[in-house]
Length: 132
Image (spheres, rainbow, N blue to C red):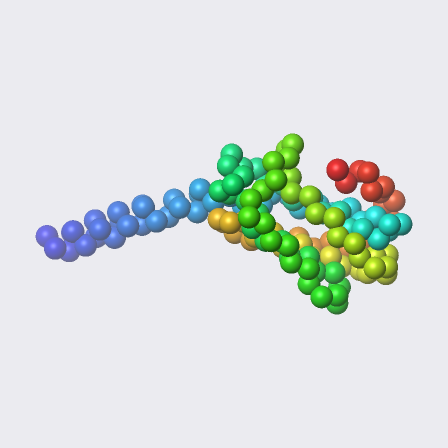
């Protein structure tokens, strides 16, 4: 009988613990649009949430080639249309860089990372106003 109780307790514990990650609010789509003329990197991170003061992107790391990492902290999520977090980063001689890595860390949930090759944007000829 004691063995059955232990099995029941273990199953109950798993049922209570496993669903917890389902309530986390991970970052959605991460996009960038480099403005090579003005040397500004526009970053757009989608993060849908019903409560931007409780569930938000708490930190964003921006890594551009061998430049020092840029880290942005947030205490809530700005209320924007579509649930986006926008970041504009000035980068000296942006057109000379090759790779951008964006890491978005939600307050609850799993970090999302995306790597971009800036050469793809140089070839496409996108304009900065298309970022937002």
